[in-house]
Image (cartoon, rainbow, N blue to C red):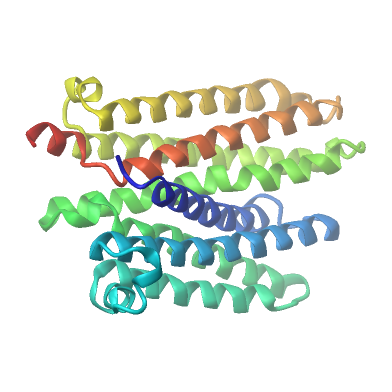
Amino acid sequence: MPDPWLVLTRTLHYAALMQLLGVFVFLRLVQPEASPRLRRRLRGLAWASLALAILSAFCWLALEAAAMSGDPLHLIVADGALGTVWHETRFGVNTQIRAALALAAALALALILPGHERRWRDGLLLLLGAAMLGGVAWVGHGAAVPGGLGDLHLADDVLHLIAAGCWIGALLPLALCLAEARGGAGAAVGPAVGRFSLLGYGAVGTVLASGLVNAWFMVGSPALLVGTLYGRLLLGKIALFLVMVALAAVNRLWLAPRLETSPADAAALQRNCLLELALGFAILAIVGLLGLLAPAMHAMAG
């Protein structure tokens, strides 16, 4: 089995990048007129997410260097393994690029801008967050396949990650927005919930379509879903995804339409958002493990 510390590090890295992207998806596409209080809270969440993304990226790098060299962590600097992975491997170069993007994001986030200029900053941070999250695909299974099929698989992985980040990452900002509605501002937050629903339709559809393509690449046949560890974990991921979709349907079809006439339903909607977020984190934990396992087709061939 893979190193549990590496699984945890990968999971936290995915979660941090998705949360960073989700903050600016929310501020730019869902609630650009967020209150000053909500904007301050989301700004703090963005800083925390960026810090965790940077820390987990370098922990991931160190764990990979130890795994590649066979040396314990405390020796990877002295024996040059860390420098070799940093400079001479695709993983290290990818980490360098994403570190540069993280630095650009930190500089943009540090800017205090008024009004319309802030929207430009939020849009830039949205793009940087998408680039950092999508960039992780270059160290995944999709990047290991040469030729045209490999390019298609890689593009599908990038799309899958960004779509998932737009959905999962925007859930906590929405929950914080709904917390304001619990004070009687249900009518004010209603349009934001509607825009989030439209975003959710696109994100969920993209996650579903790209996930099916990815399953075709990684599994190949229904028999391998139950015949390999990779396939069984993928089935667990699919089950959690379907529960998330069911919760999202309840939110959209039952709770959201009642929000303006019954602000108390904001509390139920907020709880469902947080439950969706917890399920999303469980999915990311599975993803953190799947990326370290041989795909089902390769495992069966082996």
